[in-house]
Image (cartoon, rainbow, N blue to C red):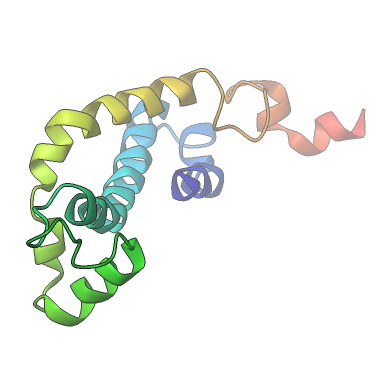
Length: 135
């Protein structure tokens, strides 16, 4: 969620100085960061599935010697060059885990776990940072 915090810090003026709803900005930043994180991290989940859950060879031997690195190396060299093949089953993952994870991250941000300061976004300290430091 580093991208979310980056977007939140860079575009704070959208809800502080402009008349854009904070929750709408939060939804846009949170959704874009969550989608990027899910798309980039799902191949690692697929690698774990291939090593741990796929059927083994005759005799119970794993094709990749129980190595996630070897499995990912095999995925890169032997699968098609289209990135879509790495996203097989992501919709099922989203229904099982993704939406719950998204709601949990939204609640964590509401509690202030993804904030650089503990000030409210409409407080005087946030709107006039130079003035509050001068005191």
